[in-house]
Image (cartoon, rainbow, N blue to C red; front, side, top):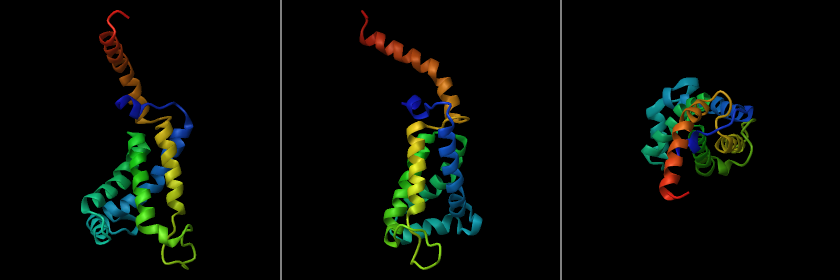
Length: 166
């Protein structure tokens, strides 16, 4: 199971997708976690989520997913898990907050709020990361290489137990 989560190739596609997603999501997470970039910080962010009907624990997970999860993506650590988590956050943002504002971002200040086009792009990058993994220069790649010999041995023992005469 762990091997499947961290397994990846040495291609640039995984690196590009996870780096782009991490770079774009991290500032949003730092706004919520530390009040950076004009954000409100951890407590106010969790309070905001609670005020719109999202349980506090989910608000905490969103803040951690956008901040620590984005850092993990940049390192390529548990890429599939963190990308899937960010995709869940993006889906929640679309359906809970941004869908009524339409597709487009509020570039000209003429809408009630931001649309969901940004979130769709993040979902696309996240989907690529879930499918291909961390790619080149990822912690996942190093973990997969370290796990390969021991997991291959375990699989061989398991097969031998299942079919002793094989």
